[in-house]
Image 1 (cartoon, rainbow, N blue to C red):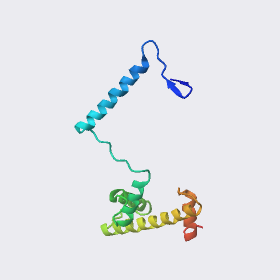
Image 2: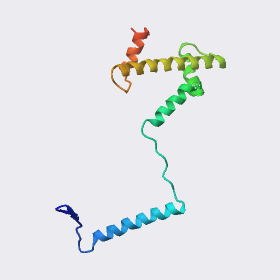
Image 3: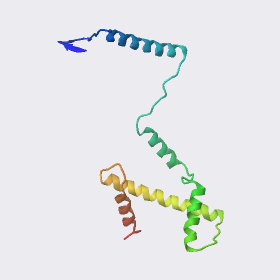
Length: 141
């Protein structure tokens, strides 16, 4: 198309591309209209960016379930324990206590880290926020 004053005129070449393009657009519109009239595929609802993340955060804050899977956590605990002593056996209640306490520690650490990121006028947490939170807690000199 070429601008002519305030009116747009289509450029027409030998094989009449402009009208062919119009026909294709009309054909696709008719297909969409007929599909919706017949009861075709409906567009899936899309939430705004961040809405689903906030919903998940609220759900996890309300729940008391474990966030880390049990078997991978048990493997890590046993691997760390094997470094200091061999042939160790763990009671199931001991493994669950270790997992609950470590998750509670990590949740608290991430809450403090998030507060430090907000204090720095940022939304994204960074490793320096974790280091600062641990240093203020007195865990690391």
